[in-house]
Image (cartoon, rainbow, N blue to C red; front, side, top):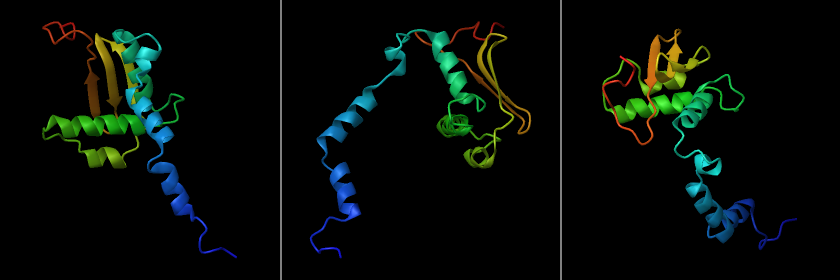
Amino acid sequence: MIEENSITDLEALEALVVGNPDLERLETLLQQFNIFEAVGAVRQELRHSDFLAFLLNPFQPHGLGDSFAKSLLQKAIISSGMDTPISPIDLDIWTLDELEVRREWNNIDILLIDDAHKFVVIIENKIDSGEHSQQLGA
C-alpha cells in the first residue's frame, strides 16, 4: 500500500534535476571542457583533423556509427544557407555504411566519399590560419 505522502518517481526525478547544485556544477564543468586542452593539443591542427576524421568514420570504435557524420553534414547544409542537392532529411534517412574517410589525401585535410549516395565532402581544417591561394596545393 502506497501512502498519499510518499514521493513519486516523477517527484524524485524533479528533485534530482531541478535546483540540484551538484548537477548544475557538473553541467557547468562539462560546458567548459575542451578535450584538446586536456591532451595539450589546442593548436595542433593535425591532431584536430585526426580526431575529427576518427569521429566521422562510422567504422571506428567510438560507438557513434554514422550519427556524428550525419549530424555534422546536416548542420553544414543548414548553416550554408545554400540550395544543395542533398537535404538534411536525405542524410537522416540514409545509412552511411559506405562512407570513406581519408586524411591528408592530395593536400585535403579530410575527404569524405560516399559512392552509394554520390557525394564528396572536403574539410579544410584551419587553426591560426586563414584561407589562401595555395589552399589545396593547386
